[in-house]
Amino acid sequence: MATAALAPEVLRIEVMALDAGEVAVVAQLDREPSSEWVDHLRDIVDSTPGMEEVAVRLDGYWLFFVGFGSASGSATHHRVARLVASTKETTPTRAPKKPKASKAARAAACADEQTRSSAPLMPALQI
Image (cartoon, rainbow, N blue to C red):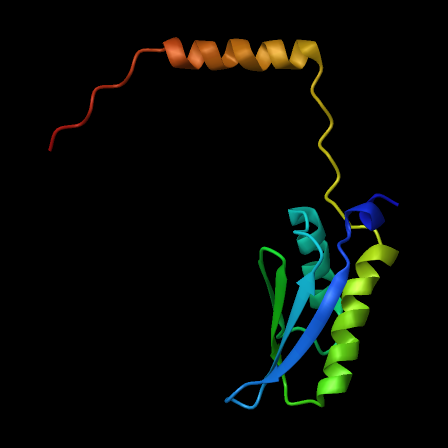
């Protein structure tokens, strides 16, 4: 799987209680992940029930998960570890590529653009 080759390994996970009663999680990665991998992780977090309010941010080798409600540290630690591990098990869903236009269609579009660009400009209205 292409995603598994792109997935970094987690070196450690730290869970911190915030003053507002929420929990934040920081995960240190072994290398900086690709933007596709981070987007895939965000998609997984967004589609996980109960994780709709959790924001994922990346800063180099560090992933920050903010927005967990008050929960036990070990349960949150385990949940983040499972989320990161799930990026290796699933492939990212990408929008289908638009089919390329044929040479004739591209030539017609180019000719149409040239016709429009060579048309005289309308004078500006003066009020």
